[in-house]
View 1: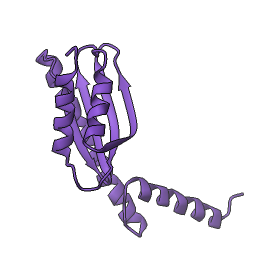
View 2: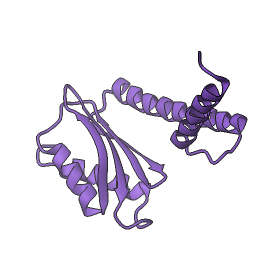
View 3: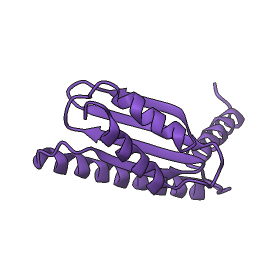
Amino acid sequence: MVSREQKRGVLHEKLHILRSVTHSHAGDKMSIIADASSYIKDLQQKIAKLNQEIASAQHANVCQPLVSVGVLDKGFLINVFMDKSCPPGLLASILEAFDEIGLTVLEARATCAGSFRLEAVGEEEDEGLIDAHAVEQAVVQAIKNCPTN
């Protein structure tokens, strides 16, 4: 049988994990849960925005890339979508652009099956020198400069 103390310990640990995932600085349970709810709503809005951008590009039959850059605590979340197959060298071109502006890629997922999708988390080498717009422009320029694009 699980004691009350063990249940409290498990609940405390779960709240601590929730606090760290949502970047909450709250101390009490209700505030942590409220911060988590707000964090989830923000993520849902970002997903809806990205889905709208993808849908509008698909309906317009546009082959221009959709590039969005979100600001994280210490870096950026970069999303790239193109409704056409990936030209050879495109991913390398984008990664080189990140390197040129001083952005270190911490995590990335890419696919070139039918369309090109890239989701990357990058961190500035020298904090505070680049902004989201500069990252977006670097990606767009890398796509334009890609040899077969």
